[in-house]
Picture 1 (cartoon, rainbow, N blue to C red):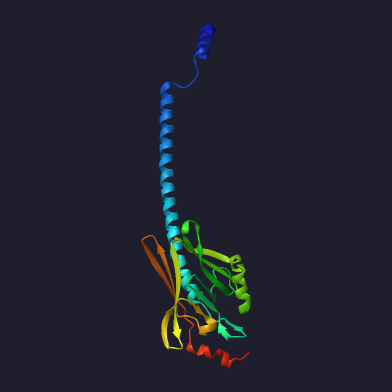
Picture 2 (cartoon, helix red, strand yellow):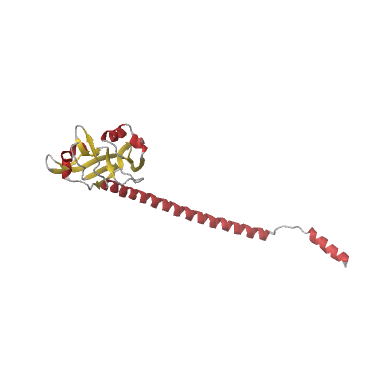
Length: 232
């Protein structure tokens, strides 16, 4: 009896240990199915991610238009003084850009000087870039110096447009000589003694183009008397 038991244990110990072919095939099928499910989940996740990114970019493009409209709407009569022109609200606009003082900054809480400039890109394209720096109590000469030496580029900035073929500014305001409202290719506060009522930014892209039209809501014809009422 003892011998039979030993022989049985010996035979059992000599049997090859490992997985059967069926077990291996089942494991491979399970592993393959897991890989397929993981790939499907990854593709769905990437599709959702790209969709969210596209929506986010579209929202930012829409938000930029809202923001620039808000910035112009909050333009203020920041009066500066020069010996030749007396007191006048700061505003400088030309065919390739505009500068004004706004009470609603893109970053921070202080009033800012805003520069919106048309800038060259590679391949003959243009971008429209928004810059701002705190105005504090800067004089006309100090603001002008910031532009001449490019110091305004040190402030916060973002691109409103990019990859366009042409950008042009125009300004709608009151002509005190003719006593009519009209469009101007340039508009300076030191000459007009007021801010424009509308600013239009026209751009070309491919076969089409568009306009960004924003309003300034602080105008009053009585502002031309500021230098008379408040002589330096």
